[in-house]
Image 1 (tube, helix red, strand yellow):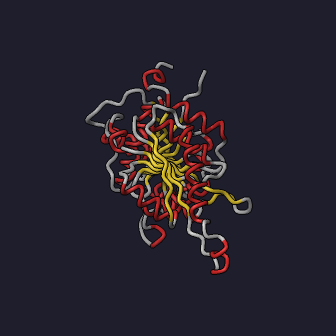
Image 2 (tube, rainbow, N blue to C red):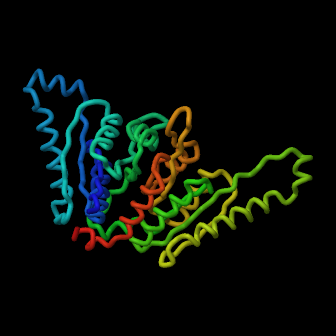
Image 3 (spheres, rainbow, N blue to C red):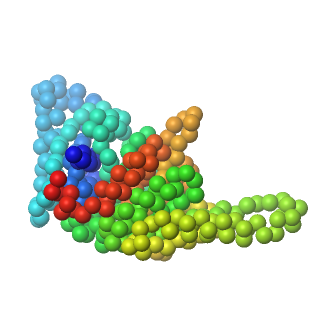
Length: 320
C-alpha cells in the first residue's frame, strides 16, 4: 500500500500565511495528502498564559484559532479529500517547524516568504531563511502579496509557466524531473534556463582564447537540449541559455516570460551543512513568484516519488 503524502503548513495568522494555507490545501487536495497546520507560540507568552490564566489555555485557544482560520478561509467552498490535523507547539519557530516536519515525516513544507524589517528580510522572514537552510524536504514558498488559489483548478491559472534554473550539476536532472512532472500534471509549459557567467580574462589570455565565449555557449546549449529531451513529450518544453549575472538573468526571464513557479535547488557545504548559495538566495529575493526549493539531501528516489505522485490523476489518488 502506498503511503499517503504529508504536507506541513506553518501558520502565524497573517494574510501571507492564509495564502500559504490555500496553496497547501490545493497541494493536499491534488495529492490526496494529509495536511498538518502548525502554529508555534512564543515561550514567554505561553509561560505568562500558564500563570495568569490556566495551564493549557493558550494551546487550546491557538488550536481553536487554527480551526477558525481554516473554516473562514474556505467558508465559500467545500474541501474534499483533505484530512487536516491541527498542531500547536511552543518555542523558536524555525526549529519547531523543522522538528514537526521530521516527526511527522512530512513530504513538503508550504510557507510564506514574508519578512518584517532589515535589508536581508526584505523578502525573507528569519524563520523562512532558517527553514530553507536546514530543511531535508522540499519547501514551497508562497509570495506575500498573492491571495492564493481558492480552488484546485486555480493553481494552473496562477502558475502559467514553470521555470527551472539549472547549473548543469549532478542535481540538475532531479530538478528537471520534478518540474516536468508538475508541468505535465498542470498542463503548463516548462522553461529550462542556464546562465553562463562572463569570464574576465587578462588581455594576453583573451587573445589566445578568442572563441571561448562561443564555445561555452555551445556547450550550454548542447547540454540544455539534452535536458529538454528528458522531459515527457506531452509537456511543451523550451530551453534557453543566457549570459550575465545568474540571479539577475533568472529574475528577468521569470518576469518577461510570465513564470508563476520557479523550481530551484538548494546547496550544501560539507563543512557547514545546507546553504542556499548566493545565486539561489538572490533569485529568491528578486522574484515574486511561487518557488519550490529542493534540498540537497533529497535523494534521487525521493525525487522520482514526487514526480510519480505529481503525474497521478487526482481521482485515482482519492481512490486509494
